[in-house]
Every structure is written in structure tokens, then in C-alpha cells.
Length: 481
Image 1 (tube, rainbow, N blue to C red):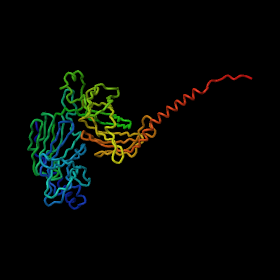
Image 2: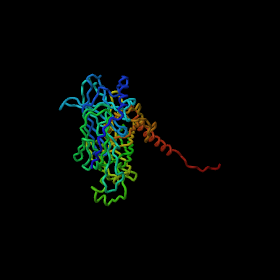
Image 3: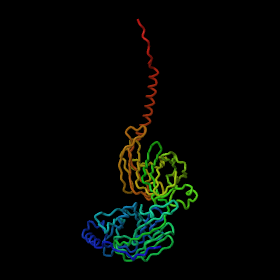
Image 4: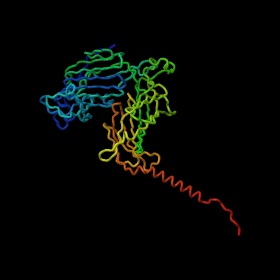
């Protein structure tokens, strides 16, 4: 059943926006990060994918510069404070060419200058154009962003046999700092079971799809709140903390150890868990739970293990070839809402697949960021890249903002310790699984340190044995004269 409130499309705090616009026009120095007066959105299309535990939004904007305006070097997009808090990643591309020759050029996206105030606390992001938009020119910008922890389970607690229902809140119209001439919003849910949704006419629904619009002539920062209440039984797998340790050895191996703290982030389980009912009616009993996860590992991995505090867990399956490796893991028990588990995954990789030499003579490890577990959110990710002993001037190159620092790690036969690059990031999703590099300087002479230590220790041991055999430690009885 759909709720039918009256049309509530409003322009929030329009006087404040006008004041900001006047201030921006008076100050050309700040114009690079504030809405440019000449930009307007001719058409906009927003597609919201709610088929999983993570919200994915695809936004297509056809923008035009005014005929009498100055060249536009950037386009602004806006997020509500709640969206900005849960924003995991945002990407933008620009369509160039037509039909079969159409290409998409990646565009830099960065938070706008905080001094560029927006109504109601909206957060602005700036998309830099490769070539400025001339007066009267149009271009199409496609934006993709991911929101985490944006689905609210309701009811907040369910029994083993109940399905999981969630709330999703958004706007029927697109929040934008520009005038929008035409726009529409499309929402896709996992199934046809949509308990309720807000109507902002024109609104239509067909099975799992809900369409809002088309709407025309929307003022800047217009907002029309909507709520969808629907069924979502996908695995709400949330990694509260992932510590990933990558040890690089120039003797031919890269050892990876990953420590997980996992929980089910959906509606909390209430009542008693029946293993018998779960086994007999898995499609109905525990529909919102999950009992396995898939980890996509690099190709040619070896010595793979999966264990927890008790010991090795045998319920795992590894499929590996020259292109990819997939590890299917099963915890010791199925996870329902609010339940936790911890485990460790470890594996080795051939050094030649990941270690290279740059043009300036430095070595660099080409690794993959993020978590190998598919369809999961990582609240806190820590990657520790342990370099060989004797490495100098380490530098991590990551294609997005992270917190980085150095520390020293010690292992067998280490004397001065190994330089360790520590990279931290919050709110990590699958789109963060991209290559990153760690550069460092290393002298091959340090590879002789451990063999020389072993040889020296062996020589000292044999020397001690020889000296012991040639020593007379017996106590002789003295003879009286």
C-alpha cells in the first residue's frame, strides 16, 4: 500500500542561496568552488540500486553553460549531510563522441571549498572538466556513488522465520545547486514485495521498480523527501575491522595474513535459534542470514588457510587458475542479525607477480587495496606492508585519500627491524579494490645479512664444539709429595 501525501517539492532556504550567489559573483577568487551562475541542468536522470545491502546511485546530468556566461571549468553536485556521512566513494566520467565511438573520460572529483556554503548543510563536490565548457556548450556528466549503512531495518528485530524489511530515505527530485529543467528518479528494489512508498505525483510502480517524475523546472536545492519500505534478505555482511598484513620477501614470496571481525548488520535476531528448523527449511527459516562468503584472491596463490580462535576450519573451497582465485568460506555457524564472528585468512603469492623496478631504480610492490570479500562493507581497514629489512624511503601511492604512517616490525633474524608502511581508511567498499603501489629503495647487499648470520652462527657453534672436545674439564686428584 502506497502513502499519498501532497506534493512537497520545495526550495530549501532559497534566500540564503541567493545571498551566497551574490557573494560569489562579487568575489571571483572563490568562484572556482561555488556554483557558477551560467550553469544549468537541461536534463537529469537518477537511478538508485537497492537490490543489495549497499546503495548504488547512477546520476546522469546534461549540463549547459549560458550563452553569455564565462567558461565553466567544473560542475558541482550536492549531497545531504546524511548522504555525505555515509558516502563511500564518488566517481564521475564525461561522455565524448557519439554512438559506437562514444568514450567515457574519468573526471577528478573532490570536496568543494567548505567556505562555499549551501542551504540546509548540503555538502558540495566539484567535478573538474578536462576542457572548460564554452558559453552555450553542453556536455553530459555521469556520476556514480556508493552509500553504506543507509538501509534501516524495520522492524529492528525479527525472528528466525521472518523476512527482513528495510527503510530507505531519499528525495524524489535531485538535490542540485543548479536549476534543473527536466528530471526523473528510478528506484530498483530486490523483489516485488514493496510494503509502502511515498507518492510524489507523477509516481508509478511496476513490480520491483518505482519511478518518480518526470519533474520540470526545479529550483536550486529543491528537495522532496521519500521513504521506501521493502523486503531485502541479502547478506548484510559488515567487516567491523580488517587488518591486512603483507610481508614482502626478496627470496621469492609474498605472505598475506588477513584478520577479520565480521558481523551481520541487518535486523537483529530475537528468540531462540533452531538448528533443526534451519537445516530443514533453509529457504524460509533464516532467509536474511548468511552462512558463506566468497573471497576473490589474486591468481596463483598457494598455502591458503582459513582458521579462527579454535583452529583450522575445513569448510572452505578454493578454486584457482592463472586468471583468478576464489575462496568460498563458511563460518562455524550461520550469521543472523547482530551476530559476530572472527577469523583469519592467509595465503602466499609469487614475488615476481607483484614486485617490479621503476625507471628511477626504485622497487615497487603493486598490490590491491580493499577487501577480497565480495559485497561487504569494511568499517575500518588497516593495511600493513612489511618491507624487507634494509629498505629505505618508502612511499605509498593510493588513488584516494588515506591515513598513512610508518612503523617498525620485527621477525626472525632481524637486527634493525623491517620498515612497515601502514595505510588506514574507513568506509571501504568493493569499488575501492584497485591497484596501489608501495615504492622503496633497497640494496641487494642486505640480502646477504641473514645468510651470513646463519653461517656465522653455525661456525661459532662448531668452534664451540671443537673447543669443548679439546678441553679437559675433569678434576684430577692432587698427589702428596
